[in-house]
Length: 134
Image (cartoon, rainbow, N blue to C red; front, side, top):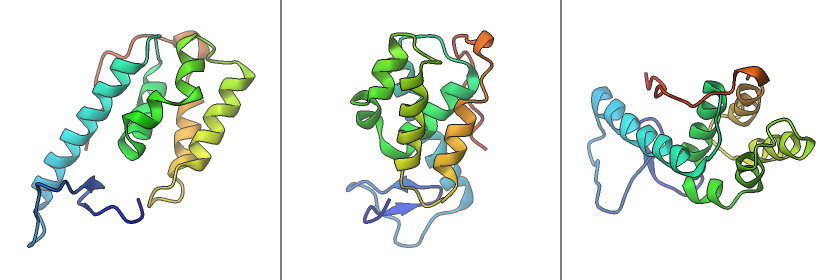
C-alpha cells in the first residue's frame, strides 16, 4: 500500500518494530505466516456460512491486503453471510471489491476474483485446512 512502510512479503511495519539492517528470508517467512494466520482468523470470525477452499483463500488474501475492518464493513460480507453466493449482487460486489484493491501486484485483484469464482457451487464446505504459506 502506498505510504505504508512494509518489509519482506508485504508485512506492515508496526510502530514497535524496527528493521534497520533488513531481515533474513526465514524471518520474512515467519512474518508472513503470522500475518496470514491473523487474516485467516479474521475470515473465520466474520464469515458465518460455509465456503469452498478457494473462496476462503480469496477472502484471506483480501483481509491480508486490506485488513479485517474493510471486510467487516463490506457489502460483500453482508451478501455472503445471507448465503447469496451466486446472486448477481454478489458477483458484482466481488468483482468491484477486487478491482478496487490497490496492491503492489497489478494482477492481484483479478487473481482474487478468478480464485473466488473457481469454486464449484456444489462443493461449498467449511474451510478445514489453513492455506500453505510458502
